Image (tube, rainbow over all chains, first blue to last red; front, side, top):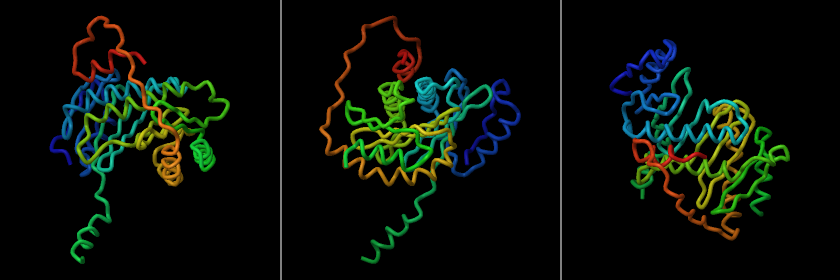
Length: 121
Length: 152
């Protein structure tokens, strides 16, 4: 769980979005976030990689929108998800902003077997 | 099995998959239906590659972003990094949870695809010449300058 709840500007978020964001922040697996304007400029950020999220995903969402045009899409990309073995980053389009959420993936359930296996050898 | 055969089997495996492509160095192997023949696959592959490149800013020694999923109004796009390229799937519009179930099929084809690509002559990506210098980009971080100054 993040140590601080973002006090997102009401200029960019509806009350329903603010409530939902606050709820997401309570999730133990959420370790960082950023709120961007639709132009990709950072409004606020916090948690892991907070200084990097705005610049990196501001550009990524630009590219995702342009890729949508390649596919013949009229609208901008409403949802992008990036996965690594340990993390998941979701970029969601809100009414007047974009939010980037980083989640740590649950540890692999079989990981404990490694130590059991090494002890038994 | 050839790369083309693997891509055809992968497309046929799930009704939601419209078509797919695999980049390998500078080559792009495609299996897309006729109605998508005008799709600029070079541009799509380049943009996917740029997105993966951008995530390298967040990578650690032991962890890198190797999959992406984009939802659009009329399509979804899934991409996965391979050893020397990227597998890209264009699908009917679907939510990621739906796709996660369908992806079990995709995973089945990764090994044969990697093997087929490894048996295909590799053409490394040629470095592009530097574009002529224009006006200085707007102020901002390095990444902003790298990407925002370029129109795709």
